[in-house]
Image (tube, rainbow, N blue to C red):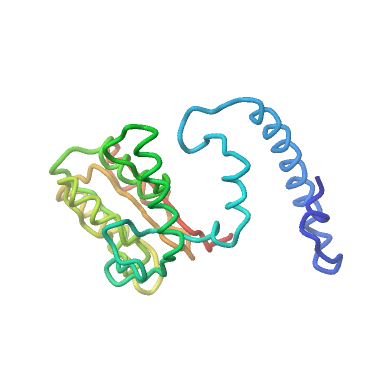
Amino acid sequence: MDIKKNLDCDDKYFIPSLSNEYKKINRFLSESKKLEEKFDKSIVLHANENKLSNFSKHFLHMNLGERYHLSNEKEDFCLTNKNGFIFKNFFEIREFELHAKQTAYKLLSANFIDFRLLSGVHATITTVLSLTEPGQLILSLNPLEGGHFATTSIIKRSERRSQYLKILDCKSEIDINWLKEQCSIEKPSLILIDDSCPIREFSYEKIKEVIPKTTILIYDASHSLFHK
């Protein structure tokens, strides 16, 4: 597999100085192909890597496969409103999902079925519940300053206490002096830098220097835009 041929690009778009990078990518694609052939002969048992049927794979090649589907049967078919975030919904997809649920109820004799896939939100829920205790303090980014809109709700609903990290306006950087003072007042159990659509890089070494050794530091970037 050759990335140049695979991307179907003209030579003028390939920069000679990046030839080594293309070689690395081609090598990665080649190794990935070998892994694909290996796992194609086996059945993986955990949910996020299950083996899809050819019928299911067909939907991944549609443009709809690149979009979020965030609603459920209790929400409006046309629009889903999440704290000011509006997502377009598709009635036809929703109708297909309802039919699939009814079939699954009968096949599995289940009382509850949810087709929504595993995501970063589930990972955040698991992280908060497994690494902290109720009542403990968790620091995260304010959604107005790039934090994920779901993090605060997850923290509060799990009976932890939420506080936003202070950002220096002039540098788009975490205020290290504020963080050091905050840690002297009350030690946070977890600092979750939930950077949504990041366009910057924080000074993680400086952060680690001022926080207690027992405080867990996690960087979770989603929809990354930053490249150094």
